[in-house]
Image: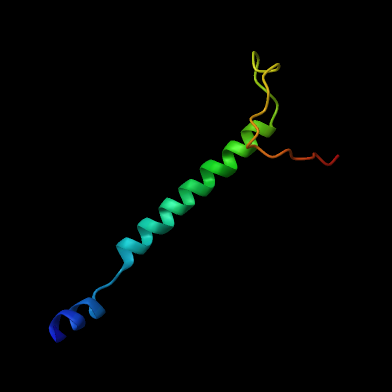
Length: 62
């Protein structure tokens, strides 16, 4: 048991941590990008479509 604890303490957790950081970063980028896209000017053919309820309204300044 002591050898197993020493082995686990000496190994690096970098690949696991990097995977978590990349996953959270991708999810954040997708959410922020979706909000920005929905709040941008609508493409041709989408002008009369309603905004989804989950997307917050962003006020434009000047």
